[in-house]
Length: 372
Ligand code: ADP
Ligand code: MG
Image (cartoon, rainbow, N blue to C red; front, side, top):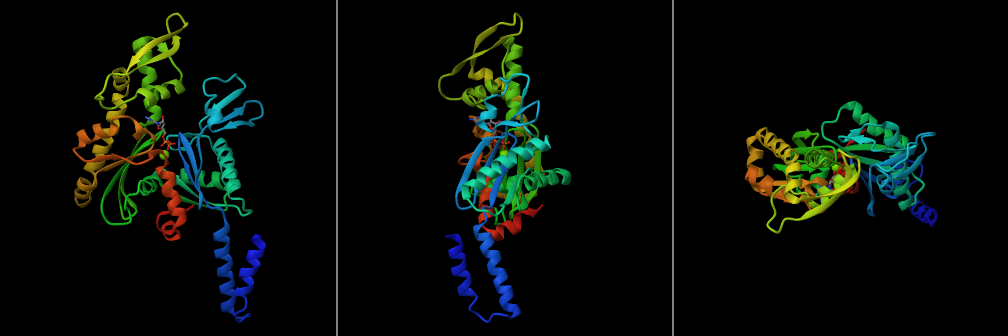
């Protein structure tokens, strides 16, 4: 059916003055447009915690943890994504569960490449074309040339035809629906698994960006340490994350204090035991991490040129990334900065939706993406 459509389209167009250089250029252009039309371009948010894949014309088709489980013996893959994350902390010696990205950049190249291949193959199947896809990948603002090359090579080896890179804060702002094409300052705070990026944007570019290695993973670790210190109880990474998601907060709530039963291993006698943790406990554990994020926002505001700072008084701060779902974080940041703060709708999808929009609009792709 595809070929019939192709022939139909082509034969009509060829009925003009065959043989001239103009016609050849026209045919070439037509072919290029046809390739672009039918290739299954992908936008990938390769995050430390989660990888999202956006297919042009389809939306987000993959949203999985950036985790891979491999056999130690032959390095073969057992599971990728959710299946692999469920194995964290529960594997026998011959299986290793790896998070190949650390602090927003590739820490384990081979495993990242294998993970990307898996996700690209899935996204590709979704669209069913024989052409290799063009891939746009979101990368942290200010990553080094070497790190950029690592992302590009991983995507090319994983089957991409061409690779473009977009700075994550720009993508996050677009996904959050901010009018970044216009002159005017916007302040975006993206709190992911490994890093928090605070960026001031104007005219689709990053004016100033500061990145700190304090984000979701650090919060999980802070909860583990708190429970260890105050209750002599050892808990796993995944349990710490669950506690953060269910009971975590940055600002005292108005309602009744909630509690949670936490099970782990007693550090003194080595037996499994259970303690009751309160919301205040968890907020106390998260305090340093949360205040470090606030301090980063403050530094960024201090470095912002006055015209843009004046804009931000009106536009306020927009939070994206999974860490933005921490209860009361917007309220705390608002109190500390005296600025209006909003959490973007569906903060964990903002970067993928933003790169997706860039994929849809060729002009935008030329403007904000760098061919890698
Ligand atoms: P990345 O872009 O680095 O992959 P994400 O934007 O996907 O990160 O966010 C993942 C982080 O968000 C994880 O650390 C996760 O624990 C955290 N997170 C998810 N939901 C919540 C929640 N409700 N409260 C606090 N943190 C959350
Ligand atoms: Mg992210």
